[in-house]
Length: 146
Length: 146
DNA sequence: TTTTTAGTGGATATTTTTATCTACTTTGCA
DNA sequence: TGCAAAGTAGATAAAAATATCCACTAAAAA
Image (cartoon, rainbow over all chains, first blue to last red; front, side):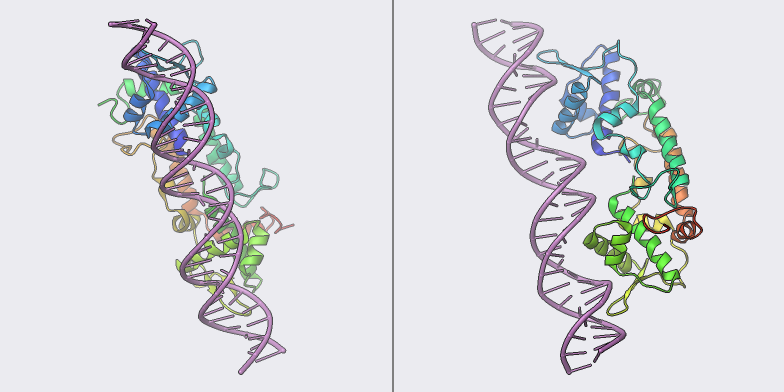
């Protein structure tokens, strides 16, 4: 399971991409309100994403957050990596430090299959593709889409 | 990903079952040492498992922890449920409170498949089956098996 | 019956995660 | 030029998860 910070980050980015497509750059207050996340915590998370160059921001009047159109699409796994790291995809299913393919814990083989599927999903899914699903009505992001 | 408390609980129970098969009832100090978990925290977790009747304990000299042989095998999901609850298997992949099959978030369908596979694995895997893998040399639990 | 061993219960402490607050800087516009 | 809008930085707080401590009770052995 992802941390709340990562969940907020993914939802925020989908919202930003959607708004950018309308030629708008939402601010953190609007983003937080629309994705139902705490305002200042959302601001903090966006700050870290900006520092990592996952998104960009503009200060002052008319400013806000946006994804550079040049940049290649952002995968979910990149967001996870920059917010909470990738231990989710490397850690043993029952927390053994010495667990590996050659020295497996008793649930290793079965768990690794599921963990790898999740990693694959995260590596193949982009924020942009999630935004597409909202746009074409195949999914919702809370208030958006209604 | 499971919480540390749940990971310790699963490892502890596998250890207890293994020792019980040798007609022994390990104490929490021994258990904590062998599964590489903090001693007092392990004691606390075992207390909750005893209260939930997942395992039993005996006080005083010669006491320790054991699984009642009458009891039907304990599944991993039961342990998860009693230590951290089942929200892992119900929560939306990106934390939306309104997400469901009929009102899906943009990653719902793909994520639900993986989450359900994990739930299925946890529901079908028993502590006893994990102990079997240790016994027949197909897996290790840290020091045990070496 | 006393001593020792072993789990229990409750309080407390530490660490990590989540959340908030305030002062500051940058930018656009009147 | 100066005001208002918007992100930034750093400190702080609150909540949850993890970890520790100690006094108490139960049971077996000496």
